[in-house]
Amino acid sequence: MNGPVEFDERQLEIRSKVFQRGFFLLLTMIITNTFLYNIGIIWTVDNWSYFIIAMLVLSFCLIELILRDVAFSPRSMKRVSRMMILIGIMGLCLLVFCITAPAHVGFFENNLISPIGGGIITGAMFLTIGVVFVVKQHYNHKKIEE
Image (cartoon, rainbow, N blue to C red; front, side, top):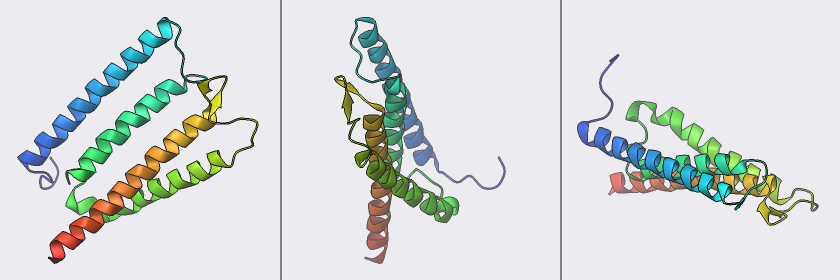
């Protein structure tokens, strides 16, 4: 390794368990989606289901890592803080854009989640990641001050 190790053994174990759960969640959701598709249950338009599944698993893993304080190393925290806030702003912009989209396409299209609906879901996930990061950082600063 180049430089000092940034995570201790406990943090590395937590990270590996989160990634393991994320992998099995992704695998389970893809198998379930494939099964549903094969029996004729389609819930999104134009293969949005795989994108939504991937973003959902990524969001859950990242939120758990943030809440357990093992998402990022202390050395990279300043750079990561800007990136996480940018992700939250991007999610808010995506939500606003998709909600104010032309009225001819809504969240559902022919009883399936439309691309606009997929954008709303993705924007909500990005916004949630940003909000969780900001709230956790605020909580950590308050905890340090006490």
